[in-house]
Image (cartoon, rainbow over the protein chains, first blue to last red):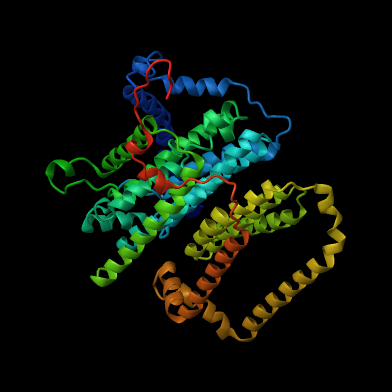
Length: 337
Length: 202
């Protein structure tokens, strides 16, 4: 009996505890990301942002959550009910499961799988289903148009992202996220070697998470917030949480691939005092700031311009860089492994 | 090991049930969604077998891209559901024939593996040897089957270009943007400041 407990049940309990240890701080981070977004945009537009609920408006995310929770859930009578309800759940779950493979520090990872980067890529490419299902099940023109735009956009930018990821993992010689970070400890951060790819990756993750200036699926000026127009209360909240959790996940991905994950910027005294996970979080915050900065600064792209940018500009450049990377690695005999 | 078996039966059951629902569902969009569920669970089966690279690839390529486009097309189609049901008996013999051929082929493959164990062993080569899954597949594809792999790539490329040439048409009345021309524009070409004397116009 004791053997079964220590062999099977105890690891399961540990797994649940670890999972909660990731998800709970993540949800708090999502709540305060919405707060940070309003404050930063407020600052950039010479406003104050939320100020009334709690000191400096610090309890505003909680108030928003409570408000959404107590609202009535409206399901349109012509909607396809099953799919309509599943869509927001799917978005939210997909935003959470990606975190299973993210290494927060050296060895600090829930599932250290060998194809970690492929797993992340797969999860992010599944994100489109939540949106396309929501758009179709709502049985509304605006929602459907938003869903179509979103699916075309996410597929287009995914290809460029895939090429960028291949360049990085050619240099690192592994698909394991921890190994990619360890390779950067020896070779230097990839933001130096793959700088153009880092820029393209930043643009692609903006498009992949449907954020401004590429937020055409919800384009409130022409589609009255697009795919989630028929959603209310907690179903809307799940979309909202999913979008922000996805932003953090993509920032973590950029941090691991290009900014050296948990590594300090210089391997000397004052920098090494700060523990790895803290560096990781600081870097994620820096990428998130770029997200918000882009939202406050750039006007929305027109749809055909968005497609042109993805297919005719970013994709050829990332293809070219992939060939260049492979060529340099072979020519100078630098191929790892 | 009990856990692995439980997971296997769960995944296998959901795969088969979803596959049945693909042909049983009344709404074509639901069919595609069940197809996606079936893909996803077969990826889970691959991972359970230790073929994690194939599993992820199945999710990235089929679920993440192919099925999205599929869903896209099915949603856009204006389908008359009653009409769709009508042809069922008419197409039944053809469908049954295709199913039968697949069954016979599968039977042949497993039958030959049972009779000639070496064939089955050849399939398991990639799994051992200490290398990771990804490495083993890459080595096999780019050394032993290099020409076949390249040929498959060329076939896909030709199919892609063919589809594009067949569907592309240039409409002379459509308005197009010439990005290069727009970027080349200078202020001197487009903006002119004139002094207009009152009551005369330009």
